[in-house]
Image (tube, rainbow, N blue to C red; front, side, top):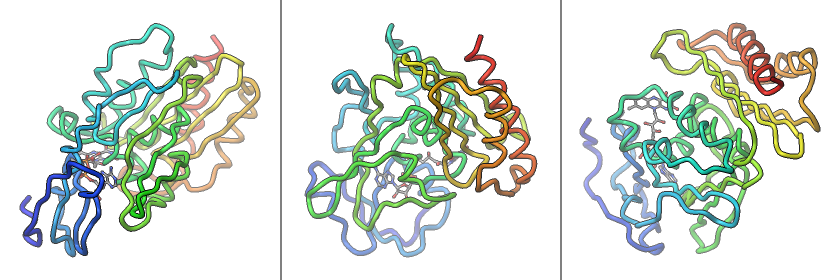
Length: 267
Ligand SMILES: Cc1cc2nc3c(=O)[nH]c(=O)nc-3n(C[C@H](O)[C@H](O)[C@H](O)COP(=O)(O)OP(=O)(O)OC[C@H]3O[C@@H](n4cnc5c(N)ncnc54)[C@H](O)[C@@H]3O)c2cc1C
């Protein structure tokens, strides 16, 4: 849709260009920004002209630029030691969107929009991704994506901060993973997404997203037994109701999906 309050557009090419004036807002892929009126926004600053490489190896991990598109991530060639690789495509399919959205929407835009059903939030949370945030004073800070997202549509980003990248550590990339998603309608927005992970040292991580208002991460020294996992998932805070599912349904199906991921990882 036309954003009729917006009268200025700037293509950012350096960090100085990311200093936002009053009324200016960062533009990622624009798929959400252009989907509804943005009252109070008078200018857009395009991040996609920063020229950041979409995907980079950093140490034994992976850096995903905030401007990497969901399609680029989903199509990343396999890496023999990265057993978690299938998760990139699986998580992308949890985004209710056509190929047109996949090709334009950025990973950073999905995380910063921070919907509970944010497919890239699910991926990043499951793989212990850290957000690299550029602060307006020229500095930077790092925090887990699970902490960056504070609610359904809210983040801890402060005015003028820009998400630069998402860093996934090597130990999570080398882990075995299992993915489950459910939605009320076949092509509907996710009602619950559960991702299980077992690291090389045997530690297990289960993340629950879409069903709860902010990402939930359960950590264990080893794969938990089914009873314990079910109890932990059931007792999470933040199950919520909206047109894509009732809170009690989300709580129940999260337990079922967690049991399935556990079984897959145990086999
Ligand atoms: C058809 C359709 C289906 C959708 N389905 C889903 C769905 O199933 N689940 C879901 O979670 N979402 C869904 N969305 C919304 C969705 O989150 C996005 O459209 C997409 O992920 C946003 O990415 P983008 O790059 O286009 O962000 P933009 O629209 O460009 O930006 C989104 C917000 O993030 C800010 N932003 C972007 N990048 C940065 C950055 N690097 N640093 C700081 N702030 C930044 C922008 O200022 C804006 O406030 C859907 C949207 C559409 C149009």
